[in-house]
Length: 404
Image 1 (cartoon, helix red, strand yellow):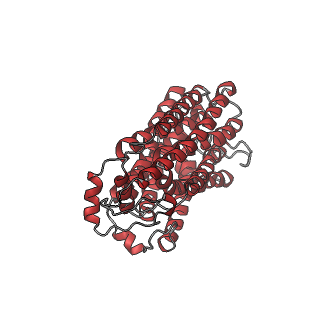
Image 2 (tube, rainbow, N blue to C red):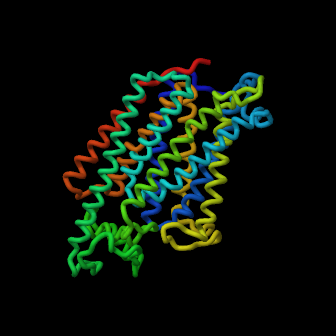
Image 3 (cartoon, rainbow, N blue to C red):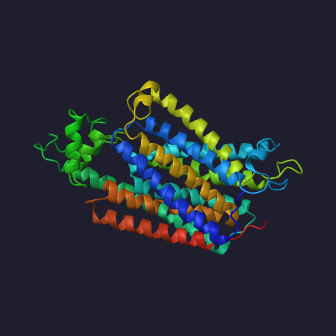
């Protein structure tokens, strides 16, 4: 099997991974803003996310000669390595729950801030756990100042969300009684939880004409999107975000335990799980949890979403290609992160959590986030991104090299 053995190769894997992981949330957000139900999108995404792991396992996991000490993917499937398999599958469950929560958080908090908050929490918890699991191969004097910067980024991100919510409230209250939507000045908290569009085709056209950041744009977006956010407090979005962050912070340490067996759960003579084998089991459990939960959500949806059916999902081809692409990007992105972590240490591999910088680019350029916001919001946003960028650089500088 192919193994990344150099620090340079590990960093290359991390950089490619962060590009993939920064783009897939933008695709899922795009579909939600176009009105596609998140249950339909996540089912499609989950299929190709698992398929990416299968492709990696049967290609990179089968390259080269197999030996007793370093077996290939298929050979490991029949070995007595179930303790490590269970750790890998536990990591997959954590990833599935975290990504599922993130999908709803993006609608409430915005793509840019949600990703920064989640990834900062991942690093604060996950990197600290990985540092000790990796036998402290990363430089503590560099790693933990970086973790402190992520904590500050979390605080700034929460402030950005609160400030942007206040900005949107002011915009909506400024709408005149003779606006196109015939809305009187209102309080965001009292805005109807669902704004119905009488003519979806005209709504689509008006959404394109409305200038990003204006009150009309916000109302038209609410008409079109599948997750309705007006009338719901900021606490919901932040709770979803923090739950996603805590869940996602656990998948990397679990994967670390699966591949390196720091707790010595394997029987003597049984080789550690290869990164590709662990990733296969990891993705399999992620896939099962996602499919089960989202089929339940078809009939018992969250957050007042409309009910749907499995037949309706099968017939919903609107945006399916983008959802499939998002799954491939996430799957290959996670695989590259784990390949880099096996070589340079999983604490340093968490530097791929820089992908919110990519997501922020898409959020601002593609979705018009933070257009026409207040100066206070802009100052907080720039401060958050600066602190986050510094933290990622410090985390990368802490990279060590795992001894064979």
